[in-house]
Image: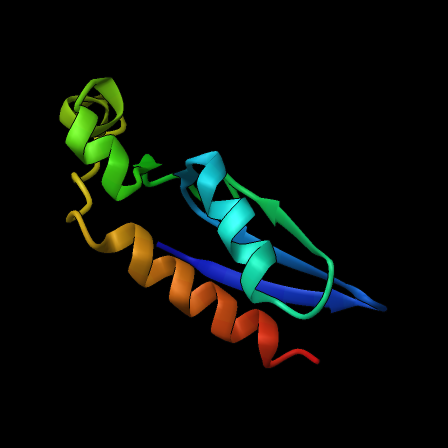
Amino acid sequence: VTLQTLRIGPVTLVCLGAEAFSLFTDALRAMAPNPIYFIGYANGLAGYLPSDEAYREGGYEVEGAFIYYHSFRPIRSAFDTVLERAAKAACALR
């Protein structure tokens, strides 16, 4: 999944080629020093990036959506891994 960051003045844009759950943006904003705007579907779409909670609940995003995206089911830890990398990249743009 492509992850890109860009800073324009005091604002940081985090762009991801996936549809992350809204929890992703909340957590990212709490970890970054600058105002963050998250842009999903950026430069591609690998499908959903479900949180650990979504895996516990099950449902379309976790169990079947990847089939319709002709993609893969992310491993359960992918959400946290991408979040950590996005926060690191955003913080490096100070």
